[in-house]
Length: 314
Picture 1 (cartoon, rainbow, N blue to C red):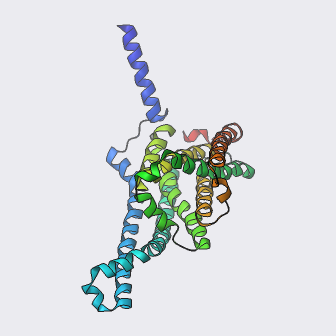
Picture 2: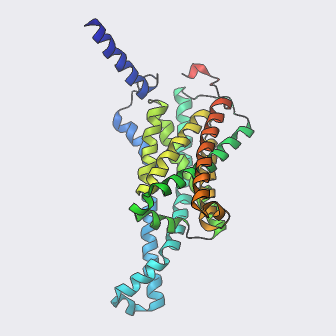
Picture 3: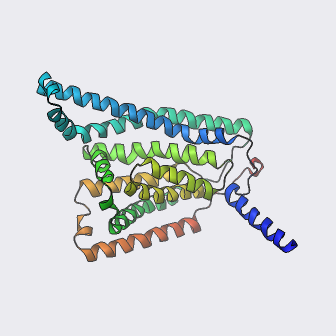
């Protein structure tokens, strides 16, 4: 009986360690913790929804302007014109939503910094040498190719139409605008939401594993379709990992930006077409980038050290 009780206690301690990560149990209610984790994302979704609604009104008004008020009696003609112009309009709505949300997210991030100082929980870590951030960029590039190629091989793209619709929106602008918007602005906004705010807030009472899984699932659901969801979950796990290793917000931003820039270049230019010119080349390239992901994670684990300097903050 004593042996059984010991095993049960041991299992309980392991589970608690996985959830809490050796941290003290948090005093806030579950509702307040949940609210703090999701309200930045909720604000972004609200602003995006309003921008999408405004885009729909704009398309209708533009259609009436071009076709005349008689178009109101022919909804099908008006709808066809709106559908044709929708990707470009929604692309701009996406960027505007991100730009409008960014100041609010920076304010929330500032509040968190002030809160840590007030509670005496602010942690200071060793700065990782700048050259080591190059590993993050290379990891982002390799992860982008590996993730997309594996999803292509799995056949998931054929199982959902949502991915095609989203891709038409994301890649609906000019190359320079896409690189700045999808490659830089969107990663900064999404990293503030999911890593800088949600993950960091959850780490106040949860282990890296639990916080990483939860926020990566949230990141996946946010992307709205199976193909992007699978990719987003795997990428989200990597983003949480580098955030935890570097203890710098810029690590996941650089990884995310590198992945998005490569995705834009692969979709909008012919730079990487030679890598998809045949099945043999495609499979060999996929194997190489998968190995590179493992190599860059290994290098990160071995080379990147960022110890906490103010241990009293624990």
